[in-house]
Amino acid sequence: MEKEKKQKNLFASSVFQLSRTVTTHLYFGGGLLEECPSLFSGRAVVISDPKVGELYGAKLAEKLKAPLLLIPTGEKAKSFDVVGKLLDELLQLGVDRRTALFAVGGGATMDLVGFVASICLRGLPLVLVPTTLLAMVDASIGGKTGINNRFGKNQIGTFYPPQAVVVDPDVLCTLSEKERLNGLAEIWKLGSVLDKKLWKSDDILEAIKGKIEVVEKDPMEQGLRRILNFGHTISHALEKLTNYEISHGEAVLIGCVAEAHLSMNLGFLQKSDFQEIEAFYAQHLVQLPCSYTKEKLWEMMAYDKKKENGEVRFVLIDKIGHVVPFCGAYCRAVSLHELEETFFWLQTCKNR
Image (cartoon, rainbow, N blue to C red; front, top):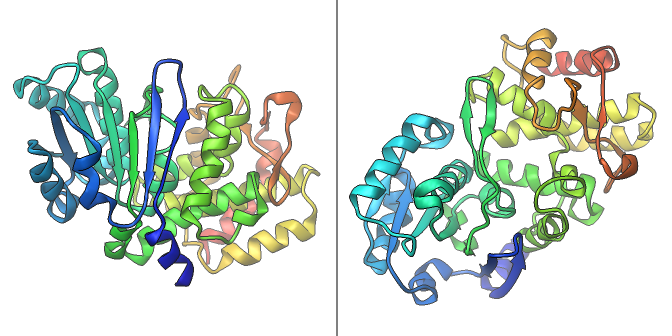
């Protein structure tokens, strides 16, 4: 609790570079949402889902003297239908290339609005205002945008860095315990691959700094940035398989333990390290749905964005806080046969 108070009261401002043309300004501190209008000038449009719009979006739109557009909640928003509708609404408002889109909400809102900003008039200024822990430490940092289709999560998207990210930890007071766990899953994942100090941590600013450190070195995900996909080969497949009934954080928790299990089975991770990981995550793992089968999961993993030459590739760890580099690829192909024991472990989650 004391740490959370310190994070809320801390104000930090910094910049990071994800492209040659855009410098992203990061603002972090309690009460920043109230001060947000003083940080920006010019024409704007605020975009949010109905719940977040009522809590924060409408007030921000009023302060910015901007219209508020509403989108569906969660992953349902990330579709071509919603993209088309949102583009129509923006163009009807007469936006131009100086009109900034303010995305206020969780990870799905960041992904969708970022994608729309990247294609509307070939690019509009983008400001991300995350209101969930997951969005603060993950979706708002790194310049990825995306929508879903029948082949999986974030299969269509762009790299499009925002001009600014405004992180106000005060808004987390309205977050449910489930949503908080979604964000912690991503912080703990960072600890698994980057810095053991973040494992079991809830330090928002340090998690953001850790992710920035990685994405600045590899903004287009050609090598090092792939480490951030640890746990995600399985988690994205699980989300799609359950039609997003399992939340992203819940899926990441399962994915991280499963891919640690795979790392152990392939001889990279010590059994004692895996047991430590499994024991810590066990209290948070959800039961897999009855629809889960290894065949269906393997089919979903075939659409993973790290695949090459038809081979499914995994990020693997050799200790908590360190990824096997594989000569700069930071992932390796894994066969269905090599996954058998990990699939069996996942079956125990289903029966939990």
